[in-house]
Length: 194
Image 1 (cartoon, rainbow, N blue to C red):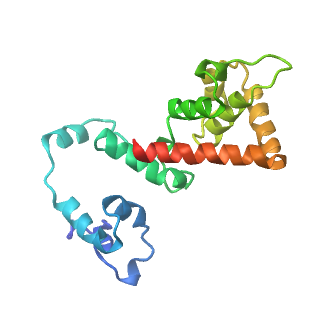
Image 2 (cartoon, helix red, strand yellow):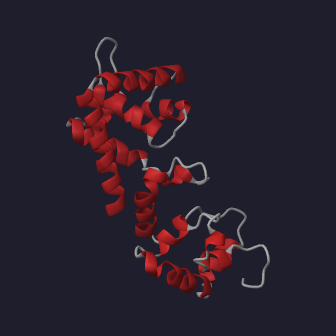
């Protein structure tokens, strides 16, 4: 890798300011928590011999977004979840929490059964359902149609209305905004602990 002219490998190994243009922090943070150990961890990672499983994986047409154990993948999702909106991370949606986790946190927080998140009656509000829909859009970046399918809503415009109403309500209702922020914090912690 040192000899290949188009690699950023030398930049990852250098602390020289001329490599400041190279956004390497996100990669190095994954390898070591302590900043003074990151370059050493990178060097160790790069020289590691590829295993048979890894060689097979890279011979396939489609590669997974993450490599590692389920615990490692959950840790990456938890650690970098808040940075998922960064347009420099093409797989940012893969960092988002699972819909199951989101629904579990909301149903526990509102002390309702999970199935209650799928029902709505005209004239009767279902705040838990609306929060779950809002967070599916905000945290996961799901398309309106996907959210509609997940929650049994036939029209994406209905989903859009729910999301917009939640934004307006949270702008006016501080206790609702705090509740939603609390759910987001629980989701973050749950991802990191998985």
